[in-house]
Structure formats: C-alpha cells, structure tokens
Amino acid sequence: SMTLADLKPGDRAVIQGWVGDFPPIRLMEYGILPGTEVELVRFAPLGDPIDIKIRGYHLSIRKADAALIILTDNHVA
Image (cartoon, rainbow, N blue to C red; front, side, top):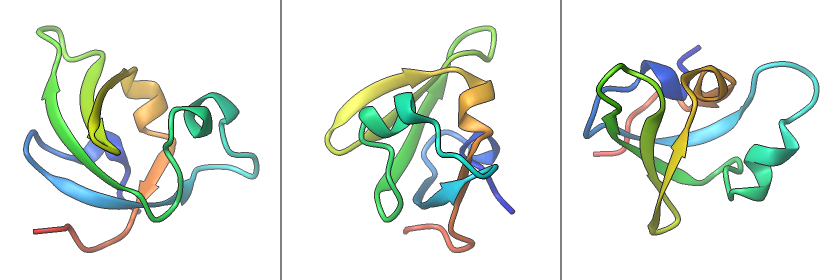
C-alpha cells in the first residue's frame, strides 16, 4: 500500500490508517486521522523532514513517521 512518504510534492491523498497494530498517538494529536485529506508540500533540502498541509496548516514530520501513514489508493485531484 501507499504511504505518505511515497507522495511527490503537490500530491494530495486521504489518510486511510497506519502501519502496525497501534496508531502513533503523537501523529493523531497533530490531526493525522483516517479520512483526513493531506497534501505533500515539499521535502527539506536533504529530504528529511517533509512539509505537509493538513487541516489548513503546515506540519513538518520526519520521513520515517510519514512511512507509517497509509493512504487510500486513489489520489485527490
């Protein structure tokens, strides 16, 4: 399945869930919840962290955390 780390800048998708049995509480506190639309804005110069736009604000998360977020198969146009 596709994760947030697989997106390219400008891509948008909807969060489906997380890798593993237990969702990362810290990411949930940031508003990263199933059914939420997310857009990958840009990568930092060395590729980590990444800048995403979610719920109307920008959030920087590490690529390792982005790899834990599973997205729906179809992108949002």
